[in-house]
Image (tube, rainbow, N blue to C red; front, side, top):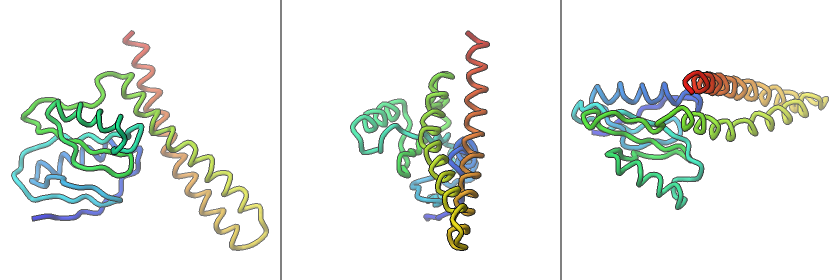
Length: 176
């Protein structure tokens, strides 16, 4: 039996999303597809899977991404689905540990990819918001305020990612 669950995770919450998917798996809900705010589960045996979510450099259909996905699948993991450049992998817990990032440097590179996606959006929303707020028409001001609210939300996410990256860099220096 299939079941759709609608839930919102912000891109900077990918670790929380992974934990939530693992909890669903332990209750017998195995992820089989993803979409925008939609998770499709199949009610199955309660085998626990570890899930990992990663932002690729390119779309999953790009040759380099396909090669990377095959590499990950050779470790015993499987790609469950994708949402734009985000891919969802899972590996049965009984098959051993599962981590896409083997060291701090690879985690930092992943966070840099997420930042490279959201910093331009932050700047664009900021510019559009300020431009629209400065125009003396009510509708433009409303649009400008909405754009600035979106900018603030994206800014919060960028801040969270920057803090996480900063912590990883500090740990990297300490352990070197």
